[in-house]
Length: 449
Ligand code: NDP
Image (cartoon, rainbow, N blue to C red; front, side):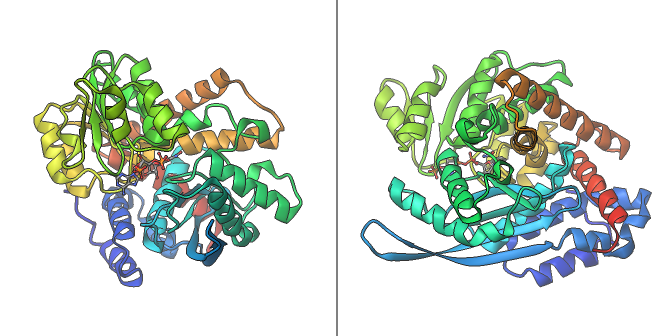
């Protein structure tokens, strides 16, 4: 495992001290700082003006109360967050997560990662993230709407197309973005389409945004495989999750000739040796908002549903963890390596533990970190902002072609950077350094702010 350069150790120690009790944020900062030793050896000027300390400190953190009334007439209280991490490259940009596990440390880790991811896309977007500990599971449509309206009633004053542009994440899809945008429009009396991305097509959304994160992760994996003269044709794949990222990753894997044999939700996973029937998954998850266990019930036959154990025990060539952080452990990675995995692409943010990443890299598995592999979502959000700014609407093909080009560029930038810094094939190092340098250069130019 790479070590932290001794010049960076005090910076990490200070981050740990000032952000006590936030293990995910510590993990994300440590991973980036581990990559920066090689950068400061070449460019010691990055140690000046507390530049790295400033990168690790969010520009602004907003925490607020969200009161709302449930269908039984009871008042409920949740907590809302928006961490505006870094705006050196553009307005804060990053999703909103509704999940009971959400706390300020998780939002900070996501905002920190987002800053480098957005830099890697080459587009003019800063980094931010938000969310709430609200649990949407089992809530009626009317409750979701009232919650979204209350969330936006506080948040709107901090947003704007030139200020901060949220999007979806876990628990926030097209329905929620619609309610959030509706309330923003009502409160501000402005049709400011560029204030949110992931919108529906009829009110300013972009074609291919729904598909972008999953498709983009597969484009990235395809490009990694090409460096070893392989493609996805005939390979077995396992994708964790069955939400937005997982569904469209599975769709693109199948289109490229791969065979997806397993997917999951937070209760368990299904294995279908005939290849996952994506129409059925979409019906269960996007229409019925049901559980993945219903897939096995509907299919019967040889399809298995397993609710104890790990999806990563299913043998595969390609693994795309696309559910949540730290879902793939050292034990899981050993199992995947033993079963002959060739490539891992993180559809989710930080789904592999540091031990898992180390095991993949030591085994020579192609490993794409989330900040590179899942950047297609935010890149297409930036394309949505471009369309909104020019009051234009592109075709699906045009938008997907841009996405494919962006993913190719991100891959090649990560690979070239890793090579330049003496670690060929290390996409973690390449992504961290390439993202960092772009943010750092902009921050240097803007002075101490
Ligand atoms: P969704 O809410 O659409 O889907 C999340 C999926 O992961 C669901 O199947 C969910 O199961 C499962 N899941 C969530 N939390 C857990 C948990 N604690 N343990 C096990 N399974 C869990 O979210 P997305 O697909 O949008 O997001 C998935 C990941 O991708 C996240 O890490 C997100 O940050 C990242 N990401 C998303 C982007 C996007 O454009 N949407 C862009 C870049 C990254 P269940 O239904 O049972 O909760």
